Length: 214
Image (cartoon, rainbow, N blue to C red; front, side, top):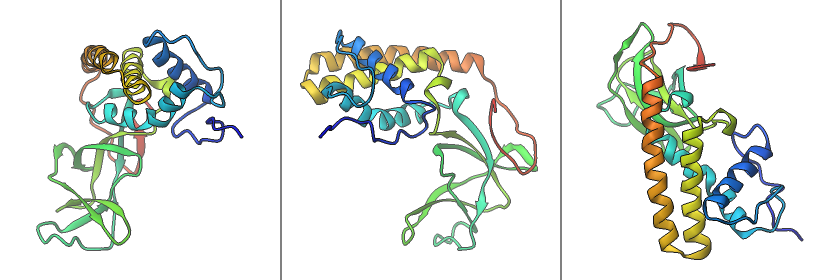
């Protein structure tokens, strides 16, 4: 019986081909030419990369307010009062959010509103605590498509995956360190390019939820 990844649901993907290309790029960084054509293949390095890529991606997304992954949307007010008496209102944490950047009133989108992350432990629900309503949020979403990633971001992601492969599959700390060094340098380039291209965007007031470019 195959232990490949053909049956794995890939979150945020428009096609399996995109993930195959990302994995092959990560293998090429390690001078590994044992490329894959599908996710069903018995390739230990590729299986490691496919298992780890979403966690790695989310950590990179959370490290910077990436223009291509920025989302704006109204926060859903919950009926439950916050357990913390310091806050009057409780909102549902956006389900597609990997990092909440700022909270504001739709009537005054240029003014940030103080907030804190909370939870409803009995329901395992993440929440946003604040003292005003209604509110909206600017955040980095996690369900980004590989095809939407800028080249420098995709390159950085591939090197971070290469580091994971080198350590998890081969326990090769020299290659791990080399990959992390390349990842760090490229990531800084990607952040600089993103900052130069983007700019503070003030959303239109209303009931909406859309990406910065959507």
